[in-house]
Length: 182
Ligand code: NI
Image 1 (cartoon, rainbow, N blue to C red):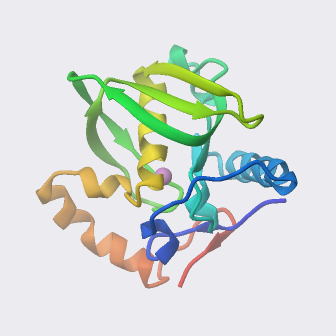
Image 2 (tube, helix red, strand yellow):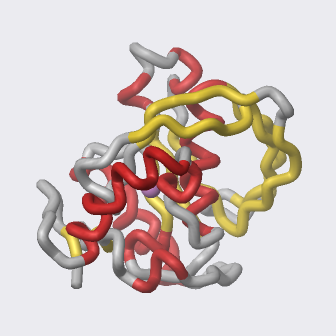
């Protein structure tokens, strides 16, 4: 089932998230998240973006393999993830977000990060991500911390996107996929 994507301005995007437990319904919810992500042509989706204040996100960078070879087969579910380490070295990439349609801005973040997380079967993993994979994972992890990527852009760029964010929050901007707004 395709879920509506909550746009900027929806309170759930700014709520603290809670750890989740394995339930019979969770498998279907994760399957719905993948279906939602695919139809929206995104590379990552966090549970708050579909209305749930849970510590859960999914990534699918497989379509980006041509530009970012490290994304080959990068399709994973992150349940209750913890950010363990961040590299000192940083880099800048242009980011966008399904909850912020029409906005893309450069964001500086660590080049690599180490995470501990459970997969959809609640098996624990510890893994280091680099390149664009690290970028996707950090962007999605931010959603679990009630952040969106524009929180991290330079003050001058923030001024530039303020009106665009206000327009999304006021319901004046829609998206090409199923969404929920004010
Ligand atoms: Ni996002």
